[in-house]
Image (cartoon, rainbow, N blue to C red; front, side, top):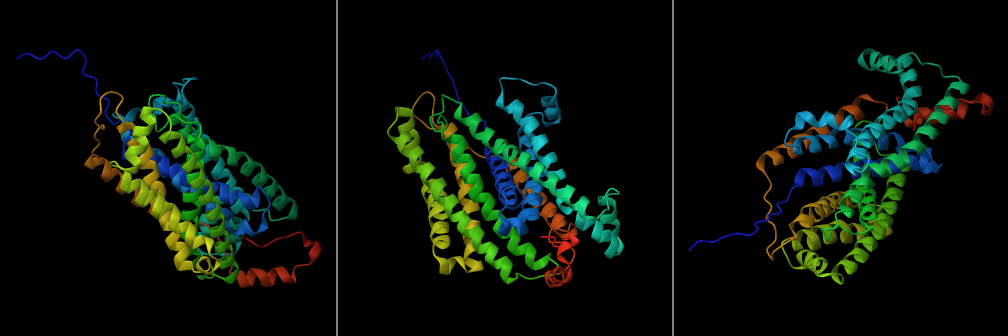
Length: 400
């Protein structure tokens, strides 16, 4: 018997794990930068000690994030063509320039934050670090009050510019998905906000983990001082509120999805009872939101560095699950027919993900080991010097 197909339309999953994790990296970067700006841009003094660490993380994450996009291309050697083929109607085209301007702004921002430490290190240190810091001053070794005041102006200005850039770099990804009208799971005005708030949750979680590790092994004191522990507890409390807002946005979006059209109902059922139910209810909601909220809500558990480390790690797992649920799951809802579109991650994509993760760890390790993220003097020594400075000297030696 002869069978004639009038139409055989397939809608394979085009955006896989590489794109999902790309969204994850950009979210981490945006969240880290916004937290670093709380002290330098918004003037909240207690967050100034984490400013350099947040910017270093933002730069390191943005150095690796675009590699996921390039690896996902069929012909990755042609990625550079996006720079001279601007499409004014394409959000992805604008994203190319955001992914360039944002890290450049972060680099200049970080340099002005560290210029004083580079100059001090060029004078006080020896060996490789002395040579490195001397080079990184680029001849700007002036430590006069006027020079330091100019640095602060540049820090404030570049930080102010960096905040909207950071939000735009991650917000545009949610904007791209929200404009896909055929994808019920994506087509909502809340999508950019959901992506941004989950970025704040995961960025805060990673920052807590990085601060705990690097302050113990790379700071001049090689220890978590009481002041630093207090800051970590305060950041954990901030993460709790990010979790609350993120959870509320997710709940609103899910209610609209469930009681909307037939496609939205199918998407909600996939998350509740379908192939993504474990990833959604178990990992994204249970591990990624509920448990971290409980840990950071109670003051007793929030004082435990072990428990807030666990909460931070779980938020990372939850946001990774969220990215996969939305990016991959959103494409699995069929545009025609009743069966979900299948998706199987390619082995080479898993290899890329592992290699990029290792590269990220190496970059962060080198950055915190060789850059003066926590200054070049022990905290006790800096405090002692500050007490002996006359009030009118105008010189601040506090690197944090």
